[in-house]
Image (cartoon, rainbow, N blue to C red; front, side):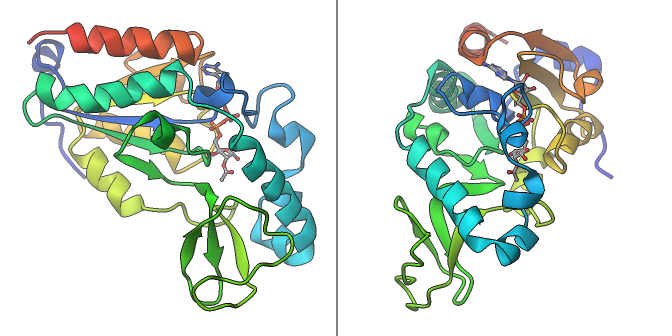
Length: 252
Ligand code: OAD
């Protein structure tokens, strides 16, 4: 197990060099994308077992493909909000603010709003709506249209494309890259996630184990709220810009 690297006293004085930010559906809510567990959220409208498991896809592929076709179409009509834009700004400016500094976004979201806002170091651990995965040749292709008509894979022509989404019971993507980012994190920030789904929900505990500071920005306390050093409650479009502004004004 990694050892804490710094004492509490040093943490209070030093600016964090490496920042890892975990985001969830709450950061995209004000862009008009439904969250999962809030009132009226996606999992109130659809049963997870019907649309977000490999078994569902085997049992009722048309239902699953239609569900994701609708979601894929919908996100293309949405736009990044101030929270996405300010995180992109933090990533751009942090290396100049703190020598060798870095900002990595680990997102559970399958929209592309962080990328469209300009963030570059983005790990999409639950996959992406705008990607299709060929289960025959394993290729992934950027995909903006529907999959319901079983279009051929551009690589192997098999009609075996599925949404490139991590379903329940499947292993999230890029866990090695996430662990590498976490391993050097001095500050871990969680934004707009309920803390209900692992392994993402466990990252705050890992952050504490390695001695990183931990901050939660959310509309309400998440399930893992007690694990954070600090919680700031409010809408993402308000609390995120305010926090980034504060970070960029901080001096050693
Ligand atoms: P949830 O829907 O579980 O949680 C959204 C969180 O965002 C809640 O804690 C809300 O209070 C908060 N929230 C809502 N509006 C907000 C706003 N305007 N500003 C700030 N916070 C706001 O979504 P996730 O935690 O992202 O997985 O869900 C995690 C995973 O569960 C998803 O990636 C998805 C889902 O099943 C897969 O599909 C694999």
